[in-house]
Length: 340
Ligand code: 5GP
Ligand code: MN
Image 1 (cartoon, rainbow, N blue to C red):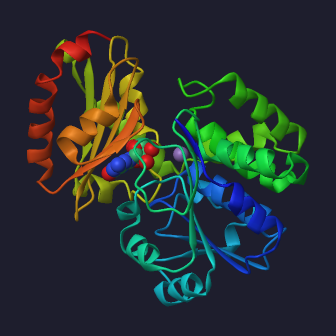
Image 2 (tube, rainbow, N blue to C red):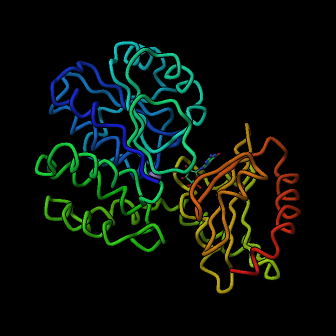
């Protein structure tokens, strides 16, 4: 569903009514989160004197090459500065998430702030926290929405090579290189235009996907060789990592990105989960194929959500109990799983 209440916002931007913009995105931002916020920052700088980008947490090093990365403030590392920036803002942009609790403390502060709050997002079931919304859950990435926002209310001629690079990055990462069901002909048209504007698809691919550390390669090998568990009668694959394994492979932010997809690569598998013991919580990533709703499964059993075929959740139980609970929950979905 497309929700666009941003016409007045666009006018205020054009009329230079805002002086201080604050942009943020979700916890552990991915390629879409960083690409969309960095592109929007660069765009808004054409109209607003001060534009800052604050992420709730750090993010994968394979995103640090993105143009504008040096100007990003990380809330958990610099809370005082982040709070000052938020207090000074007259407009706050929330990108690639639609529920304030997903950004923890920073979400509470945004919930209380007096600035105009804007949501640009492509997840389902948005919370009603924004004054202006530009959201569509049928669009593959928030990056595409940033492009569409500029196209609708401004002009895509203002997209320079750096902005094109950022937008292209999120388009590629959130659609699995244009392979997932969220890829449309419009996605390809946008990507083509971004290439014309200077996005280098080969370089972007290299920097995001071909920059494994040796320890990350070993982690992937170890997971495939030793850890991938298959439940063929439920068309499901399962992979989990405990705290010792995370330490053994020096796992840092971003290292486990993509692991959950290996399960779905197996013939006959339609549902894959990655369960990671992050000490404070057990974090889960779900991916599915076709008609099996990963987001509904995540919401029903693990207090999570996300997209139809790509979702996440968390558990406060131990890793062992979470795995047990997951396997039990699967049994309730046997018919749906076998029906894919
Ligand atoms: P990932 O598995 O890559 O962390 O997340 C996949 C998708 O699920 C993303 O779109 C993300 O926003 C969503 N997601 C991940 N974890 C959670 C969660 O705990 N709650 C909700 N509502 N969505 C999540
Ligand atoms: Mn996204």
